[in-house]
Length: 231
Image (cartoon, rainbow, N blue to C red):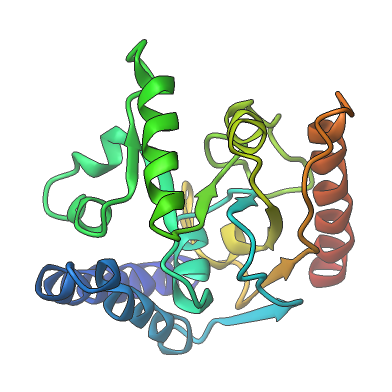
């Protein structure tokens, strides 16, 4: 049953994404197809999934940092965030035939981690998106964790961006999204996930440990909610 539900969710995701990309192409010049992208929220009720949201989005925040567990993490934010957010993602994802257009069409930031000029390209792109009033979204872990009780170590990209451009950060913690929909192994183990929007803040660049403190705070919130959902 767990595998069958994951297959059903995958079919709905594939069909829905194809439709959304069609409308992204038609409306890409209007807020980077924001309305088309937001349509992914219908996937949750169609799959019988419930996403609990705690706290509010801060529309004055210019950098959103999130932990990363599942493909559904992007859908959680795209479905409900009120602004034209801009994701930082691996270039290889944008190169995926057909579905990569979901990133290229709305002009997300796609970086090549193997390219020595990658950091310079990232800084230039982030500056442009901030000038366009698009909040930047980044997964500081860099890749998907296993969705249990531990985070992967935060990479320095988000810290560099926040300090370089003096960005206001809103941390968002996702819980159980990997149990909601997992591709390795292919299964659905829970019908409920949670998204916790924490208070925004300006990083104190005089405190050399602010980034580590951010990871600790997010992890503490994660553990509390993980235990509530899985006890």
